[in-house]
Image 1 (cartoon, one colour):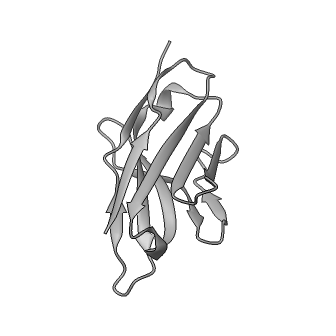
Image 2 (tube, rainbow, N blue to C red):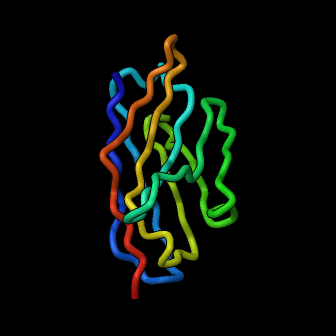
Length: 118
């Protein structure tokens, strides 16, 4: 089992930036890949980006150039840095962990709200 807790959301003005955190606990040694997703009101959850166990990152085209995913030194913390925030970035942001076990397991955090508004 893996537990994920996101934090760092809040109200930000357009053009601002913030850094979201996701702390993983439990069987973190099984984690193979971690992703960030977001869900805006009335919309489907969309993938923002992810990082592999080896540190390779990938991003959705909608956020490429504005988002950076990284891990803390202890490897149990995932970060999402977003710059040049736009109102359309308003959403609940979730982190997800995918294990290397067979069968593969997925775990989700409870999400953190990001609101971009003046």
